[in-house]
Length: 316
Image 1 (cartoon, rainbow, N blue to C red):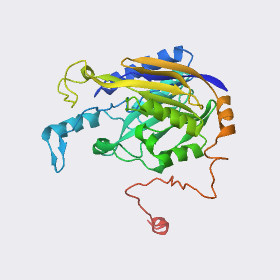
Image 2: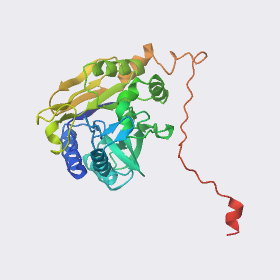
Image 3: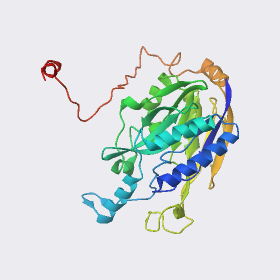
């Protein structure tokens, strides 16, 4: 199986979800026009990644402006499923692509950093919620549980996603390898030089294709009253990209590209995975389950669960 994949490196329109979705539409159409059958967007593309924001928080304290900042961020998030997921599903169907995209999901009063998956048939396949927000992200995002760790069996191979610094959680990676992931999407906000080494390590370790997507985002994309710690000069780069596509042997097939918006494409051949696993299969012949074992709890963990008495209901 051989197909063309695309990564979109661009910036969202912060605090303007309709405008961001319009940009997603245009960029997905552009990527599909290259012949891509898979299109991957960065972390938190819809809803935005608030790079440099403090939300007025300090240990033991919150500011009035911080509350207003969070309210604006919260209002830009989307419900899953909802009107926006219907729009994205229709887009995937119209462009005949698998679409993988990072969003900020609103569920009750909590936000989650989530990746959504859509099929070329215009179906919403499912989602992965980031299980461990990184450092200050914990101020504004909740924690996902094991119920959203999917790997989808698609015609192009087994497709899944691990978000940003989840990729530094060895057991998280092993859980995905155990599911047989072949197309390992890595939406991220980490634009530092070493991130390519992380992508190459994951590709070699999992003997899978890694598609790392990061935004290119500048200060002038934000409203005037946004006050990032990086400064307010309009051209200040808040995220510089660095997106890349890596083969199961660690070869960089496309990228990394910095300091500009772009669409990266490469042909992925699943036979390369077969050859790679002949030598090293971390969840197979190289695993030593007689010594090491990983147990993964994939049950949903709702904070409130109502237990009903069926006998009582019969008499109501």
